[in-house]
Length: 166
Length: 137
Image (cartoon, rainbow over the protein chains, first blue to last red):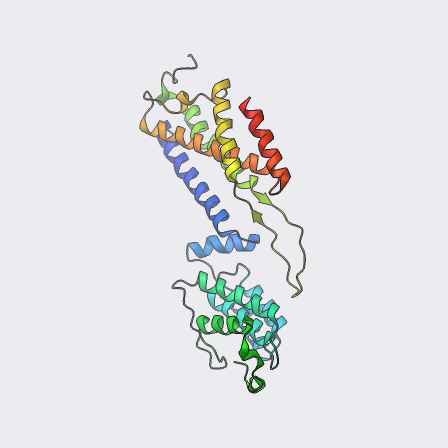
């Protein structure tokens, strides 16, 4: 191999490594699964485990939220599928919702997850066609979680106990 | 060959090209990647989820300054001869390759200082000042 070809190959190799390092430091993946998933999703090759996703949905519709999050987490280990992350955020909302008060920790966690879902969505918009959900877009879910975390005079409204979980 | 001149015939120096194009950048990039790695102790949250196991810390401004000073020290002591990497006698591709080596050396040096210096607090300041005085002398 001539020195010219060697240098060109070396430059491409260095550029690829440098791009990977910049990606790592910019995205800050938390686990090796997220690293692998992030790389595969960058090239459009990331796929979730469909069976795990369906199992998670079954748990979700039976109000078994911890089991649903575990199954959905297994289906999307790299946390790169917007729809799965939307459902995970929804589990936090449904589990944290209360007639008298909401669980702020769960709502905050749900808000973090839905923000992540919006960030990884290709157009920043997630709409789910699911008749069992009261909120079918990430924007609605995000707004509801933010309202639940905000303390204002409406929290003292006695009619709040008649509200319905969405 | 004197330290002030570039290699006589760069085109025939294939082992040198491989070292300059592959070995050195990859070594320095590996240091750059792993120098910022921090492994926090796993703690289960209240919600029963494991915390993150990977964390990468970018170099601070002080680490970048120290890396720049280190490059100057390396050049002054002769360990780094910039004219061997970039000069008018080299081809454009050779100069680009040399620039990549210098850039990756700078990044690796910054990450080494980032690794050796505490992240925050008084110790961060003391370590930074110590390294600065050490290199300045």
